[in-house]
Image 1 (tube, rainbow, N blue to C red):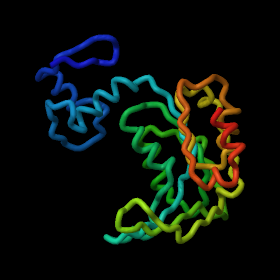
Image 2: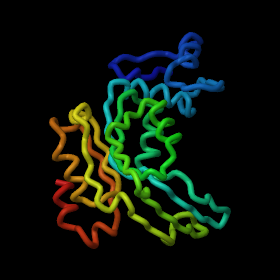
Image 3: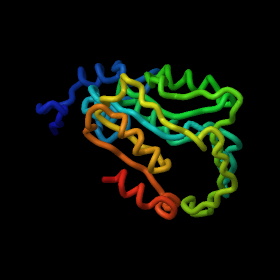
Length: 219
């Protein structure tokens, strides 16, 4: 069976293909069992990397703390935030990305270093001395879908004004995390060229209290 290489050509995976794939820079450390089945995760990673090797991305969202309770266990206070894990996930596939967020001096520097070690640029990550990072706690029900919010502490997020670094203002792709629509719009206003794709996350809270600004940024 033939597969597209994402560059207008097709190819038939052979032994050399899988050998090269296993030593590829896209697999960041650790021994893996490489499958010939392109539906397998490691195979999918190779295909995704082919399509995204020249992709530039900025992610705007929370780098924060979460505490999760479920019927099956509790996490305690752990590193959370949409931007944190979007960045880590995207680092498996792309070489150029920026995270734009804000943290307090209670946030672990080791996690910031981990992001940087994966190629995530943090020049847009604002650090505030003497302040606390955003914190959310929630309890999930048995269906693991519905949940109750137990605590929301905005802290540094309360007056967050994203600043897009100059080197990121021509990014091809923009991921706008679940934030105030006026904050999301301010990011787009700072872009110097129109991105190929903008992904926007929102929720019923913003629909209830800021529907008009939300409609405006969606335009």
